Length: 78
Image 1 (tube, rainbow, N blue to C red):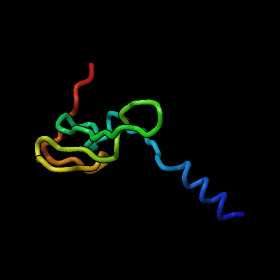
Image 2: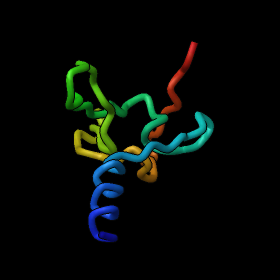
Image 3: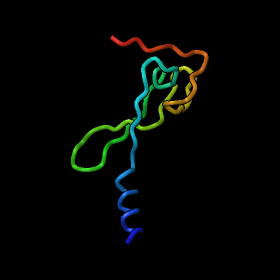
Image 4: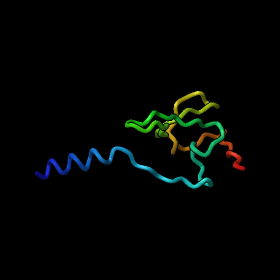
């Protein structure tokens, strides 16, 4: 019985969300970073951000929370 409850709980926790302050030096706050998205499952069509992206400056796949390179350029928000 415990295993069934644990399986149901694990199935409901497929994704986790975190918040990153805009002042933090991480790839997600860089102007050269483009985040990857995937289409959600279910009957509602929307795009969900993933934990990976692409660095336009280095032309390679990067994690959103990776330590930024020396070419880090803070994104200007209006």
